[in-house]
Amino acid sequence: MKRIYLFLLLLVSMQWACSKLDEVPQSFVVADQFYRNEGEATAAVTAVYRKLYESGQSIYNSLFQIGVEMATDDYEAGPRARNAHVRAISGLTHDASNDRMQELWRQSYSAINASNVAIDKIGAMDAGRINETVRQRLINEAKFLRALHYFNLVRWFGGVPIVIKETPSLSEDALYVAKATEDEVYNQIIEDLKSAEQLPAWKSYGAADIGRATSGAAKSLLAKVYLTKKDWPNAVQKSKEVIDSEGYDLFPEFADVFAVAKKNGIEHIFSAQFLGNAGYQGNSLASRSAPADIPGINGDYADALHWEGNLYQSFTANDARRQVTFVSQMVSPVDGKLYTLTRPQFHKYYDEAVVGNQSQSSKNLPIIRYAEVLLIYAEALNEQNGAPNTQAYWAIDKVRARARIATLQSVAPSLNQAQFRDSVFQERRKELVFEYQRWFDLSRRGAEYYVSTLKAAGKTQAAPRHIHFPTPQRELDLNPKLKQHPDWINY
Image 1 (cartoon, rainbow, N blue to C red):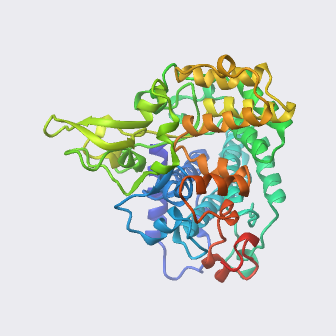
Image 2 (cartoon, helix red, strand yellow):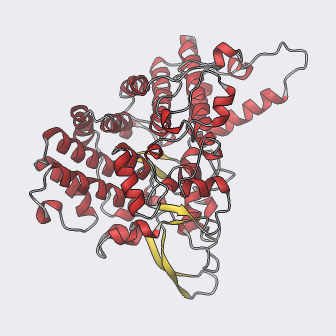
Image 3 (cartoon, helix red, strand yellow):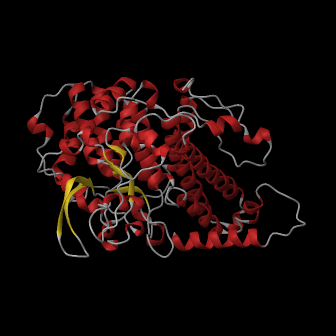
């Protein structure tokens, strides 16, 4: 994928550099000059993947962390976080002028537009220029990515504009689109993911295509969409399909999930792909996984655990996830001394291969993995049946067994629906720390739950409106058809 991306970048750069001044101006001339063969079509879709993580503050790099996770009970702006917008999110005093909200919106629609262009242009290619099987695969990959971005947008902002065609011009009619309802956005997401279910299984991809979307990724994301919509029967069905037929499983050890040597392995259903060398963007969470006060480690305390949120304390001492997720002591590569930290620090993405330059980390970031599918299955079964059954206990206990903690069945075999629901959410919190799930989990349980959880963690500014983000003010100013989310009017 990296070779294809470089080819695309070079070609697009050449096209801009070689433009003639006497050409008739066109809004999107580059796309019209591209898509001449199968290789260029593949390169175009590869470039859409890159929009997930292409820079140090792209969506699935640090932007998700500083723009979303800050607004939870797990995370807060640390002593070196001087940016007022980041600190506002951490303190829940953000508003529509916040530049992180603007970037979440802008980058998502940039990626959606790239998906739309790819879908339209590849669909229009002559049969002689592309194999039909490859055409359909590439279109469905782009639809999967479009669905992922719309899924994020509708959870962040509520109803948002739906744009599923290439923008043909820069006219007002083409650019100004009103918000759709949340149901309409979800219907589009589901439609795209049902198409993406036709993608190849993950084991059928060759080495050059590892990391692309698969049928299992589409089914897993669809299960998560249904879970978010509280469509329990469909959430059960789709997660069960993944469990029964896609060939995924848990790694034997929790640490394997984040090991560079185990990237794109049996548990990784879909991940943001990082390659921190040769000019590529590394995983910036690695820097946030390294202490700043140990010689030679070069970490970043711009972000910090929210200690009052009791995240670290929620792990039992024998939980195998605790020693992977956090660190209390480290040996300096400079002086060889063992340093003890004042408090445990987040450590999940620390990359031992680039000790002195964590910004070049090649650790992937899981967007959805098999452990989460098991927890989706457990939660949906409990909600559908009004209480946990044997299969619900099996699913959550498979995750707990890997963590080397007692099975829920053995310590609490007769939980009611509400108790089991809380157990699943607690398990999600510990299993998926800083995998960009916590804010979504808090918000989907509703305003009362979000507010009470954040206030219990000491974030006293929490209010019902915080289960959504405000529509960015810049977008409201640019597009007269947009209206502010009802939760954020007058704020």
